[in-house]
Length: 253
Image 1 (spheres, rainbow, N blue to C red):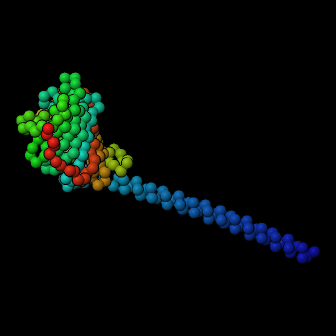
Image 2 (image 1 turned 60 degrees about the vertical axis):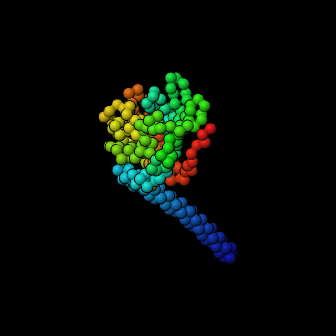
């Protein structure tokens, strides 16, 4: 009888030990999960802090250095509710191009003239200028006096924007980019639109800039030229910074 009581006590002790051990495992698991959760929160917090590590002035200064040191880039220009007017009643609806400093430029553009959509290409290389005939699409060399793009300077566009903007403010950070709101005076956009501007007008501008200063996108919002409206938006995207570009004279037939 005594032996049975002792066996019963041992069973109770073992049961209690198992309960304690299982409870301990649960505590350990919960603490582990707690520490993991705290660690994740800490990392996210650190990352969030790093995302806003720069002020708008600092990231713009970083971008100035980046743009100054970059020898090549590519771009696209599109419009929302409008176009860019050039001399000769040429309305650029969209364009894409490649740039190599100091003066190599190639542009493919869609132009609206007298309600007709025309496509043409433009190349300046080794101090020569070529342009395609919008009807035959054949290349021809032209003097600068006949150059429809002579009043604009795509190489200078991004330099003027990044050096002349005012009242900059970081609006958000996403997709590895600082989204900055600022203003610029219309006169400082001549490298984009030429002389056909509304002078001395404050224009809203939005920029997307990476932490290393690489400019991804620029929105120019509102009236810059006489035929613009408040809803006119010029959208310029930049990419392939520093990528080598092959240049050669076009084949003229």
